[in-house]
Every structure is written in structure tokens, then in C-alpha cells.
Length: 110
Image (spheres, rainbow, N blue to C red):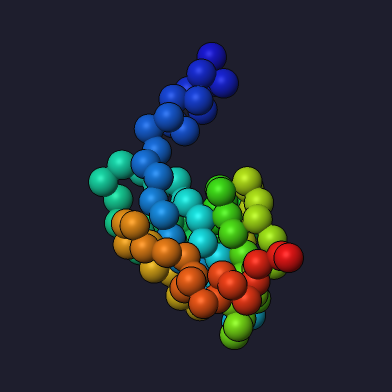
């Protein structure tokens, strides 16, 4: 019964594409928020109560770049990020390239 409740909670989440910056990384991926919640609410949720599990957010379908050149580091279906390391989180505008065409030439494997 508990497993069904957890599955139902996950199913009610909405996907939000974001760009996350840390001091040394740019991460583009998807976070899963509660329906009709703001990104700031998601980032602040339970953080003030300071439970260890609340220090991390889950990002799916993530692409990680090294700053400042935005060279591709790695892609991952799932990763967690410590909230304390995050400097900036932006919703990714629809149909916006992750990196410029010029940058993609620089990072392409030949």
C-alpha cells in the first residue's frame, strides 16, 4: 500500500527543464516539481528544516558542462546536486539550444 502511495506522488509531479550553475559547472536537465508550484518553492522546500536528505535535488536527463568554456563533461540519466553548491537556477526557455553552434563545434568528438 505504501509503494502505491509513493508511485502516485511521483506521478503527480510536473517536469521542469532547468539550467543550473555551480561555481564550476553548468547543468542542463529536468527537475520534478509538484504541480502548479514555483521553482523557488521547489528549491526552498524543507531546506529551512535542514534535514540531510533535503540538501540534494534530483536532476534527470542531465548534461553537465565545465565552466567557463562550457565544454561537455558528461551526460547522465540521473544525478543529484547539493543545494549548497547551486549558485543559480533558471527555467530553460522552450526550444532554446543548450549551447551555441560555435560551442558545439568546439566540444564535438572527431
